[in-house]
Image (cartoon, rainbow, N blue to C red; front, side):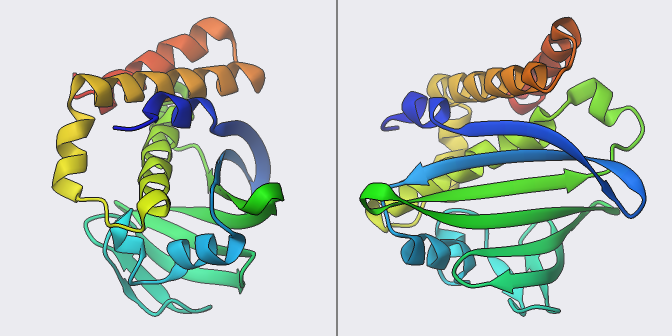
Amino acid sequence: MKDVKTRTETLRRTIGHRVVDGKDAAVVTVSQSYPTDADDLWDACTNPERIPRWFLPVSGELRVGGRYQLEGNAGGEILTCDPPKSFSATWEFGGGKSWIEVAVIPEPGGYARFELAHIAHPEGDHWETYGPGAVGIGWDQALLGLGLHVDTGDAVDPSEFEKWSLSPEGLGYVRESGNGWYDADVAAGTDPDAARARADRTIAFYSGE
């Protein structure tokens, strides 16, 4: 797959914290710049006809107060929307609830940046065991799909993407992604040995080990 290593190396990853509903929440943020303008990038990530071309089929009412459902994945409520700049929503899956905040940022030269923050209350020992890569690697893969769609306008074939993800190149992408989240974890103040251990567990999980 074209330029995969370059794509993961140019992702920006950060980890922070904020108080949500009176409790500490982890904020895992990833962003990527794309060779398209902000209007097109906004359309790619909000148009129900285009979202399945790079992510998952989506149903529901894509408006503030409406509920959405991603096929076989999360659903939730759309909380805010400021076209073509940003939206936020709950992210409800497996009985748990977290939040996402998406921003589309114009950049020089006809580029635009997609930024996504996933905000969650650490539950049990999951955060300590797997760290930010538990959600981060999945979002990295989604942003890779978005880039492939933006490059060509074509849909990403889910079955082909799944095959690729289990290929040597795809598994290499998971390792690069996991190592990127290790770096972000350490930059956020986590002990390097603890960050390495949980990054390795997450890489193994995404690699099917």
